[in-house]
Image (cartoon, rainbow, N blue to C red; front, side, top):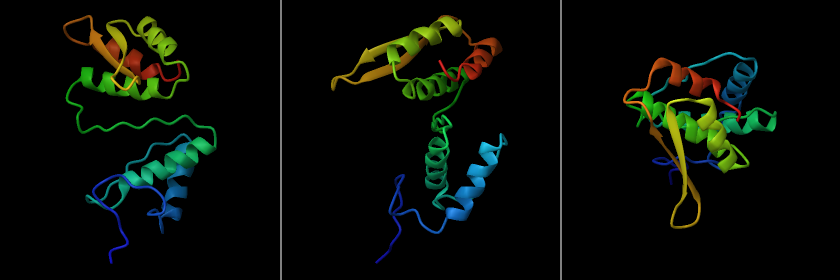
Length: 143
């Protein structure tokens, strides 16, 4: 019987024998440094990142995660990044309004889906998002 789970992002009890790597990631990031994780597919990189995020959040860091696979433009990056930031906020409606004030050129929309959960999307008021809009969205971490 194979003890490994694959094909989806898994958590405990499937996280084992990676504590040293996790602590190195946490130490590196909590020290204000960047890092790149590189390994072949299905080696557990995403699971390791989620475990490191859990540890960093226990230390008081605010962490966001979003998938870069569907990112194909500045607009899609800004939307994914903003959604990740908004999802960490206590008052989503207030955060959406603050984002709209802070980052010019976007119009955030908050709607409720069929199950009653808030769903966030955005429109861009300009035909092409410029560098300034991208820069402002990156600065806008904690609303």
